[in-house]
Length: 213
Image 1 (cartoon, rainbow, N blue to C red):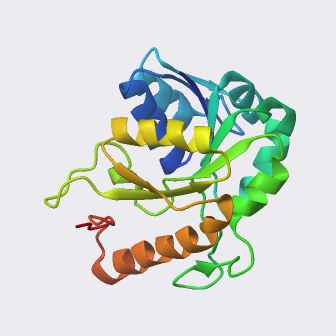
Image 2 (cartoon, rainbow, N blue to C red; image 1 turned 90 degrees about the horizontal axis):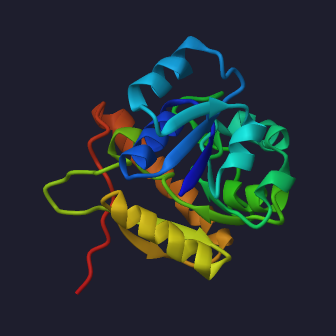
């Protein structure tokens, strides 16, 4: 599958490399495709990775991942051009974090969410919330003593969620579908639990797991 990534920070680069590792081709969208950091990333990942603008990455991908800081998400989607994303699965890996205070807090909640905002900005796309409640070092092939961790997802399109759950299985996760994109209102606070544990322990070596009988 051809994967477009919007955002060239840690999350975008980790997921991009992970998709290439699993046999997909990736175009990493960035505001500066000629930057040394992203050029070094592409060289290290190999032939399956390329660089482009947000618009080029959005047009390239059969599936597109939004991996931007929340403060830059709306402008990134505008630069990507929503027309380029119509009919496509869009994985929303963002969290609406406000870094003006420490620890950071959620800028949205209760009645809306980043996932819902992104779906509204991309009315023709099939947005699925995923990858937002774990640190990027564990997004691909997570290894924990308790077995595969759980990735909770949400979105309005059943077929899109089935595709994303298949990708999550390939990435080493079990996944749980919580429902529509409005469940992002609960998935984004879940990320805050992960963040607070990280700040308390100075370690990102944790993930969530749903235990079932």
